[in-house]
Amino acid sequence: MRWWATALLLVVLSGAGCLARLKTIPAVPARPLRAASPDEVLAAYEAYANGNQTLSASGDLEVRDLRAGRARKLGVRLVASRGGKLYLKGSVAVVTAMEVVADGQRFWFQVPSRKTVWTGLSGAAHRAESDGAPYYALRPSDVTSALLPEPLAPGPGDAVLFEADRDSFALALAPQGARETARRRVWLDRETMRPSRLRRYDERGELVSETQIGWQGDAPRRIQIDRPAEGYEAILDFDKVDRNVPVPAQAFVPRTPAGYKVVEVSWEGLGGPKGTPSLLSERGIYSRASE
Image (cartoon, rainbow, N blue to C red; front, side):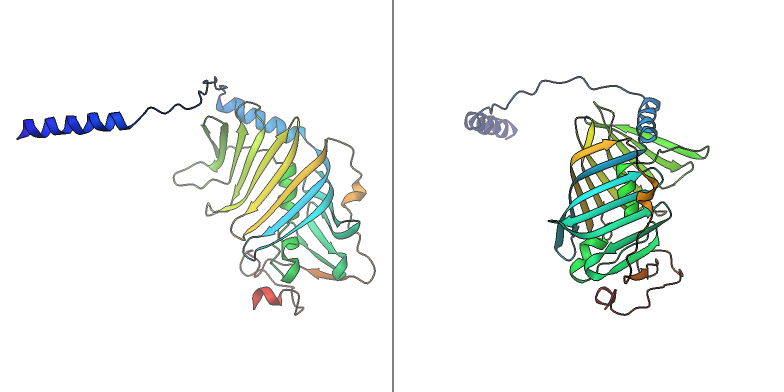
């Protein structure tokens, strides 16, 4: 019985071999992978981060509220400086739709059509609000950290973890010790040694934001910022980029027009620490998002 079973299997396999023809696929020549040590990769990232102090750019900005299924696209001009400083102007045709100023400590988010300025500590969240929700998904701290990434700067109590794949090198910064969570992770293109992806995590190890950087020549031309927990995306497509150009300090000074309402944004109810006093006492500003 075993002999007959073996013979039958050989007949079936030979028939299947006749039916299955070899498929020709395009040949891909193997390319040598660039080699680098963890120290070399870290030095390359730190050199990039420390070597870029300012950036001036213009192009398009698309901000998406994925949960609400809404998006807005604007023309944009911006200047940024090391230390979380930003001036960004978004326009539709020739009409200013918003202006954002950050001085490294606070931000001012101005919407002329509403004659309102929202202000608060840099990094505070903007909750979705009616038709303009995508505007408030744009956090100045996300933009500045994407345009001018901070060095990893590991301290004595930090560990830097290294990994590599066919396309990139990756570094993760975490405290030393068992079961610690990563705080930051950066990817560098394996060939150019330029940053291609950046991630920041909270104290629980949850992803806070991710930045993807697309390069053209020597300049970053596409910056995509994702905040998955809130369902927000911001995509910057630049047609002009200048790095390390003089930027006047006056660019980062807020200018609140006369007659505008100024609203202080706190973290309570907006994804920040519990117990933070809320200053959002005006009904209607965030009512639709909270009801």
